[in-house]
Image (cartoon, rainbow, N blue to C red):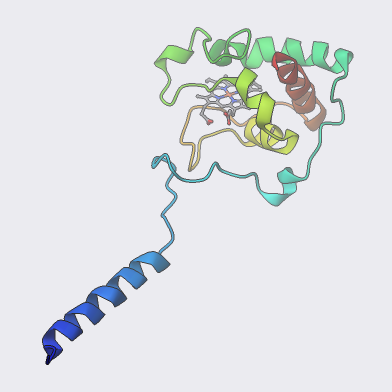
Length: 146
Ligand code: HEC
């Protein structure tokens, strides 16, 4: 049986189109749901909490948490502070976050906030308000929500 060259061309065209589509990376604009969770930049990724498990640091961090974080994140970090309901996106559950997130991820999110892609949130950047030790103390306190 003689095959139509036109049909062959069509098949080739479809094949090359779908190959081209496979080669494309997802845009990763943060609202697709199925994109991988964002990773901290290298300078944050390797950080570890120098105060991990230190009760004094956690107590100091609690004072800053109550001043700077609780209004949005809530007293137990569940994302249910008095300001939370007016926010979009809403503050996540820090008590859940600390079960899985690395120190570097948490420090990064506190230091740099969320006013950029892919977060585009009202989470403030704290690196110009709190010094590095103060951020770690707050992180140490948050880690007690675990
Ligand atoms: C104005 C409200 C507001 C305040 C104040 C605030 N946050 Fe947030 N925060 C948010 C929102 C909204 C999100 C969720 C969106 C995002 O991830 O950027 C968030 C996200 C986070 C995350 C990342 C959560 C995740 O699941 O990745 C951490 C960690 C965090 N905040 C810690 C803090 C700490 C610590 C403070 C105080 C020093 C603080 N936040 C103060 C609104 C706030």
